[in-house]
Length: 435
Ligand SMILES: *Cc1c(COP(=O)(O)O)cnc(C)c1O
Image (cartoon, rainbow, N blue to C red; front, side):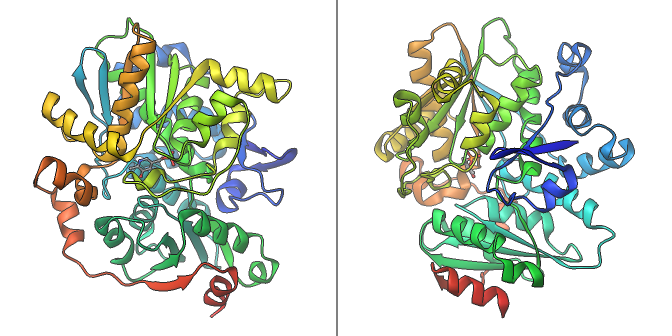
C-alpha cells in the first residue's frame, strides 16, 4: 500500500512509514494513492459478512498483500472485538452506537487498530517508540487502552486542563506503567501544536523515535470506515437515499465515511454536525476556510477550530481549483451547528420521545438529522452515537437524572489519576521530553 502527502503528491511512502511517522515533513497528511472500489459481490451481500469479516475485506482491498492475510485477519479480530449496533429511533432516524469498546467512545476503533498495526510494524525493532497524543477528551483514553503494557512502547497523552470531563480525565490518568498524562494549561489546539512541533524538532529526532496517535494517523482513519458498512448492513429500509450524520471535531470520523463511499458504499450524503466550533459549516456556506480558536462547549470532544482532517476531505473531492473542490464537497456534504442550550434540550427531548439516552455529541447528530430531514424529506438518516452518555455525567444528569453506569466506566470512576501540570509553551514540553 502506497500513500501520498496532501502537501506534495510526489512524497510517497509505504504503510509502515505512514503509520510510524504520521507527520510528513511537508506538513501534509497521508492519503492512500489508490482507493479501490470493493467487489460488487461484497457490497451487495454485506449481510453475509460479520463485522470482523467486513473489516478484513475492507482492509485487505486497501492494504493488499502488504500484510499477509493471516496476520491481517488476526490483527483485525483483536482490534475490532466489540459490536456496532444500529438502533432505530423513528422511521427515518437511526443511530449507530459506536461506544461498545473498552473506553466507550468510537475512538476505540481507530486507536485499537492503530495500536495493533504499530505493534506489528515495531515487533522486530530494538528502539523504544514514544507515542505522542493530543486529546480533546476521548482519543487519549482509547490510545492508552490500546497500548497499555505493550513492550517497547511509551505513550504520552496531552490534554487541555479543565476541558475534559471527570471520567474522561480518569481514563487518561489512571493507567500507570507505560502511559503518562500531561495536563496542559491551554486548549486542545495548544496540545496539538505541541505534538506537531515536537515531531518536526530535529533535536528530539536524534534522541527519540516518535509516532503520533492523533486522528491524523492514517491507521486511525482506515478502521473507522468499517462501521459505515456495518451500519448500512443493519438498516432495514434501504429504499431511501442514505445520509450519515457525523458529530464532528477533527473530522476523522467523517473523512472515514467519505472513504467508505469512495470504496463503493451506497451513501448519498454526509452531514457535518457541530457545536459552536463551526469552521466547516462556515466553509460550506462561504467557500472560504477560516481556522478559528476553539470554543469550549458541553460537547467537548468536538471543540476544534481548525480540524486536522480537513485537507483529507478536500483531497477526496479535489477539483481543478478551490472553487470546484468546494462545489464537489457541497454536493455530498451539508453542515449544521448548534448552541449548548439547543444541545441540552435535545438530550432531554430524545429521552422523552424515544426513551433513549444520547450523549451530548450524539444529540448534536440527532439535531442535524431533524434539520437535514426538513430540507431533504426523502432520506433515511443515521447519526453516529460517538460515546456512551455515562462519560458526560456533568451534562447528562441535570437533564435526565441519574442513570446506571456500565461496569467499565464505573471501574475508571473509582480510581485516582496522576498527571503532570504544564504551561502551553513548547519549551516546557521539550524540557519534559528531554528529561
Ligand atoms: C472525537 C470525538 C468526536 C469527533 O470526532 P472527529 O473524528 O474528531 O470529528 C465526536 N464525539 C466524540 C464523543 C468524540 O470522542
